[in-house]
Image 1 (cartoon, rainbow, N blue to C red):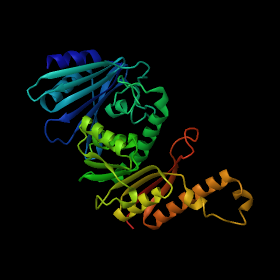
Image 2 (image 1 turned 180 degrees about the vertical axis):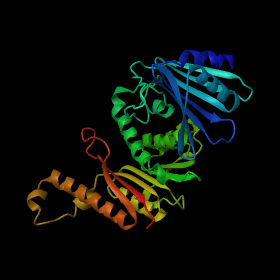
Image 3 (image 1 turned 90 degrees about the vertical axis):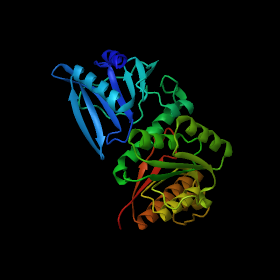
Length: 352
């Protein structure tokens, strides 16, 4: 463990951003430990966060005690440690025989280090932390920097994960969850949700991405295999005719066009999905039929007719979900400056 102690001696200071210890050698109550520095009475301390049975516990240590604890964790229980420091990212892997492998990269400058207990709200996925699927999908560089043209996409991904984070207590953790992303496309969100639930929060997840485009599905399956995401699969198929599972816990649809959203919502209701997250798109069905003498002075303008039709369609969808026992919210998904399709329907099945 001498090599690990040398690494820790160089990073356990006020410039540390965070450390994550994970990948236990055998079944463990705590699958991940997160470590952050904070200042107390002029002294740098380190807070260890442990998640056990959906509860988070904290322990605080001074520098020497923190170094000793981390070294002991890697020696006895865990196989992996990732360190985000002021100017570098370090990954430490420990084999069964105790062989230590270290990878180190430059961490982009500009990450603000907050030492107070009352930190401002952070993004779920942090800029500057290299995440494999974001790199392969062109959102991040290999160093973890967000690609300029993909910054809006990065914000969109984080925003969607926030909607899921709000309803985590509704998702059972004592069994495998089945999640379907209808019309997954390039699957930015599919990978992000899998990573968020499986890697960050240790949920047992089986995730399916469904899309009509064969080449997109093949590419996404290759990436899932490359990352070792064994419970993430992509299938070619149509929402209306998909019958691959009997029960689903969460259904996602992002910009499923026109009535494709309704097919997805219908499937979700019939499966009794606990959580529904849908960002509709292109509501042509009502736009082609809507007629009102009273509203004609407004409906004669095409763009207003289109927007009124879209709002009424989503209102009807929300009411139909409530009729089926869902608690429904219509939320702003992303700023209007990024996309006019910015409303998200979130439904949570309640016991009634």
